[in-house]
Length: 348
Image 1 (cartoon, rainbow, N blue to C red):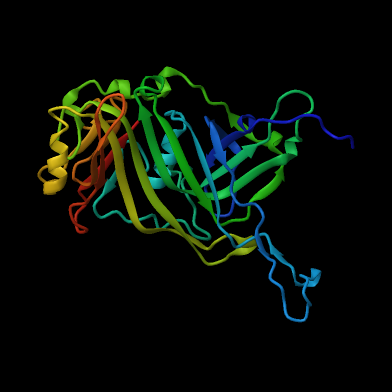
Image 2: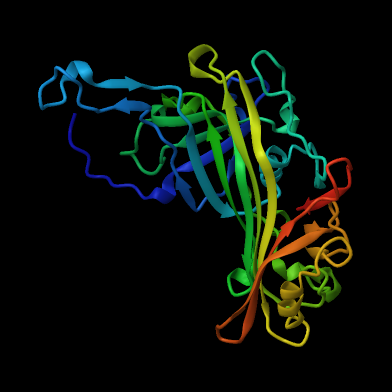
């Protein structure tokens, strides 16, 4: 086999996702390609032990080396332009909600369905198969059998970000997915059925839609002029037990589901009040509404955005740039564990 003279760009790899119907079974028929500008690849090498053992002298001996390609967490992160074509799948997975509008209740409990032998509803996106496809450019490309497949994935963090100085506020996403199941390498990706993404204006979302000042509110302070924002969801995963071929027996969620937002706004008569509100700690049930939307309440099909009806400040500070600005950070809080009151609403 001759040496190859071809080098590839990280941008040439493709990513596709598909919801699963059972723990331990990857699905690659009916996948959806997603827009990615960056991929942080997961751990592929398994468990390795390189420790020097007694009786082996001063050199690690071959018989003392240990390798196992299972029983470890692999984490992969992706980012790109957000599209309603595939973004809802990621939001469904991390929120546990089965349809837009995605909501989080004060008495949120994770799904109890993700376990050995349980059937899952593919439309609910409780588990995901994620495939990384090798480049397909020109004649001297890697083999189609060089695909990488992560099965039994759960989204543990998800972010929307936007900046009015970057493509007019076009919103981007980033997501981190984890799996405990062994990663499949040298998979023939030519056998996959994949729908290509279409980056049309109707499927993207932009901060330029937030044209009503009264719907731009930080902890009760309305009419702020937003320069940039990040809406962040964190819902970690816990993998329990070991079933056949290294697949966990149960997948649950971590101790906290956190929703936060970091928002940079122009310093003016309206936003200056944020400094005092933070110091006085007056946010909460009566004054803590945070919303960034093109409607008074984010709704399916009619608007996009997010709302924390009750939120608290975690940070407020002056921020110098081309003009003076304020950085404000808020966190969603609930209405009591015994209530089903919605404490976050997200619509795309």
